[in-house]
Length: 371
Image 1 (cartoon, one colour):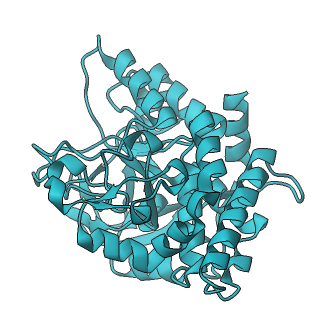
Image 2 (cartoon, rainbow, N blue to C red; image 1 turned 30 degrees about the vertical axis):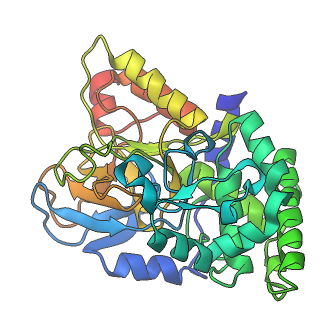
């Protein structure tokens, strides 16, 4: 059933048009890339100039939204996902004003993250108080991450710090009119309840902006997260500040039975370990072993290849992403990342990609190795 839903997601997916993509345009225009048509995958990213091996394509991509997994609320910064072990205990700031936050309380790694969060979304979230508890319990029961990330976007909209159309440029699932997973509608109702509570506590400070968080908005955002979110895997504090070429495989982040996986770069495990590595990667994306989930704009435009020419890495110790070429890339060539364990055999790679995305990979490497 899960694979069938993912195949349905892939068949129904579409790209947004040219409206309301100014934030995406701003990101892409700052890069030496060209976004255009590809023969196999629709829209893709092409090199706007010659790149040498190891050159940076994106120095630092900030997430549109990031959220720690529930499992890692006590170990990751609530805002930037930095491992809390990397900062002194006295630097940490409690979330939700030190209250329980409906079961989702954690810590910010520093005053700067606390201030940024409060200014953007956390005032509304804190005002909601325990009204967020049903959503947290729902996500805990079903092992979900995307509803919490979508709720964070909703709080930012309510505070007037986000546009409801910010994610519109990303590929999404197009459900037939009037059709959407019932659980998603329930999740939206839970978020609306939290927003109503927060607005009441703040004396109507949201100014009616919470009305923009419609069911249609929620379905669009969550469907985009299913196809675009990354599982953020930050190196442990001992190596977290190293600025080297060690990268994570480009997995897209899975969420529950209809998930899509985060982007990994390209590791090469031994033959005896590939199955365990692949199963661990899929399990962690489903259950939340990574620091958190994040959705980016420009990085989400990169298509998949099992022999990618771009690596993804979190080298700054937080959710800021760097993308760097693995090989020399000629001007006009498509820039690709790997969505799964590139060191696995072709059948394992194809199986993982079909499980996560509903497509059988026919990149040049897969065709050469498996036909």
